[in-house]
Every structure is written in structure tokens, then in C-alpha cells.
Length: 432
Image 1 (tube, rainbow, N blue to C red):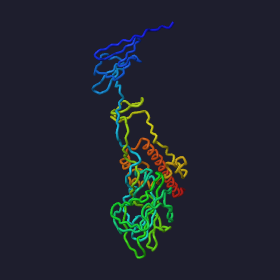
Image 2 (cartoon, rainbow, N blue to C red):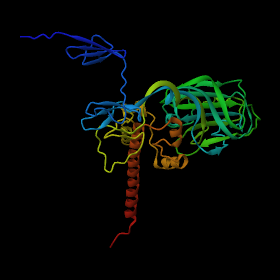
Image 3 (cartoon, rainbow, N blue to C red):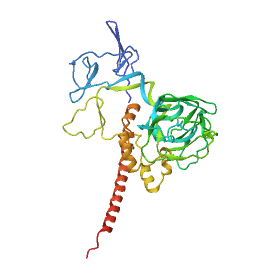
């Protein structure tokens, strides 16, 4: 038989506070229809401090020292009820693609005035040269896919200052080295042309592109500089520029002569060279971008899960994250290193990210370290300062690629040792 209990409503008013209590044990403050054991329509302030009237499990107190609430646990401890985060709201800076800045591609310190590498080889009237710059160099300098609006070259010693019919062309390319003497076609003229006269000065000379160039973020770039400064009988002096002369990759194709014709029309060059001028580029880069957003800020270090913390536990201070495992989606496989070495090409599934990959020879690696003071497989201090600290995943990928590359250097050195040993054995006198 079902039993029904009558419903009673008690209304108590004390010092302006009205409390509604139902006969079935529901209490409402600020509501006549409480839906729970305690139903409060409005805010609650829990007052108190170091002690509570009834410090049993479930007791809540206000801790004026911390400015937060404490809850009493069954173990007899006071635990902070609020999470340990505060909300930061407003404009913050993060590293993203979109800032327009000017930095240098190539950090060569050599000064060269030879006609084949300087873009201002005004010893002769007619000049033309192709320069190859790698996507990896632009990326290392902080650039990302976007519009390039200006180029520049740094003159260390000024020669003939006036150049007539000056022209710059650009194009994307899959080439990893320049070969042969036939000039590349397919350039987009981004600055100047017939009738364009420029006046050079010592220092960096910038050329604002009349047709901005869009870089896809992955392709290498060919830049063609040419001019016709006069006819037969012309005589001038070269302007020396900052150049990179290390490594064995051919990066320049050149032509120079004094002819009645225009150097820009020459189809065949004189020769090639490894020297190439440093390039100043104004374009879209990764850098500090102001954005509005909300962040959770923790004033204390975190321990995530139940990691094995060795005793004695060392407190590493605010900002420390202690966890059993940390996964970062920026960690990428580097199979392309071994694929390139053993197969001679990067696998199809890695072409999107590593189509321009080329393992530096041992000699190139040594030359790079001497000049840049970091390994070619790991970005250096300048990238750290310019782009912000590397993510754990990015650094893991670079260390992974470095480890595989170093293994291949060991393999190469072992081959050389074995070859020398075999040669030494063959030269030993026959024992009687």
C-alpha cells in the first residue's frame, strides 16, 4: 500500500531573510519551490577563516589568506576548492605567420667583388646571373608562405654607382643546385626592366618590387638580376657585396661582357659558382602577432596523473609540468633522411614536407658549423630569438633527424676507414 505524506510549507522570516521549508525536507532560500535539500536563488558567501565551527568532512570555509575556499576532506585535510587557474583576458602575442618583416637569407661573412657573384658587377656593361635560394633557408630565417614585397643586397665597397636598364626576375623552382650555362627561363619580372636606372649606395640597397612575388612556403627560389649599362668602350668598377662562399652546392650562374646587346637577353652564361650574395627579404614571416583571447594561468607547477617522481622529490618551481608522458603533435617522423641516403630520393608520403631535403656532406656540415655555429639539422640561437622558443615536438623532430644524420656520418667514416685499411693491407710486403 502506497503511503502519501502531506506537504507542509513553513515560512520563517528573520532579519529580512525569508526561508521556505517543506515538510519533506526541502529548504529554499529566495525561492518558494525548492527543488533540492537546499535550493538557493542567489549568491552564497561562506565566511570564516583558519577554523570552522564544525570541521568535519564536507565543511566549507573561506580562507582569507589565500583568497579562496577550502573544503574539509575525510582525511582531515583542508583542500582548496577553486582550481589553481586564473583567467587572463585581453591582447596577447603569439608566434604566428602574418607579420611583415625584413631579415637576411644567408649569413655569409665573405666580401666578394668578383664579377660572377656580385649583382652589381659594373666592371662590364652587360651582366646577367641566376641565384638559387633554398626554401629551408627562408624557413630558417623565419619566413612562411606569403608575399615578398622587397629584396636587397648589402654593398660593402661601392663601385660604379649608376646602373641602367636594371631588372630583377623571380620564380619558384624544384632545383637543388644550378648546373650548366643555359639561363633559366620562366621568370616573372618583379622589378625594373628596360629604361630603369638605379643609383647604388654603400650598405643595404633595397628594391621594392613593382610586382610582389608570392612564395608557396616549400619551393626553392631562383632570382635573376641583369642589366645593360652601356655599349662598346664602357668601363666601370664592381661593387663588392656580402657573400656566402662555403659549401659545394652551385648556387650562381653568371654572364658578363661588354657588348652592344643587352645582358638581359643573353641565353647562355659564362659559368657557374658556389658563391652567392646574402639576400635581404621583406615578406610574410613567423613572428609576434597580437591577438585577443583568453588563457588559463597557473601560479603553481603541475603534476599530471601519477608519474613516478624519484625521491627525494625536487621542487622545480612555478611553470614546471611533471607527467609520465608528454605528447606533442609537432613531432614528425624523419624517414626521409634514410630514404634519401639509401634510395636517392624522398618517399612520396614525405614530399609535401621534405621535397627540398638534401643531406649535407660531412665537409659541408663542418663548414656550416664553422660559419653558423650550430648543426644544419637544428635551428640556432637566431631562430630561437626571432621565432620564439621551439615546441617540444619541433625540437624532438630536429634531434631525431640529427641523430639519423650523425649515424650516416659514422657510416661514411667507417667506409673510409675500411677503404684505407684495405689499401694499407695491399701495400704491406709479402711475408716469406
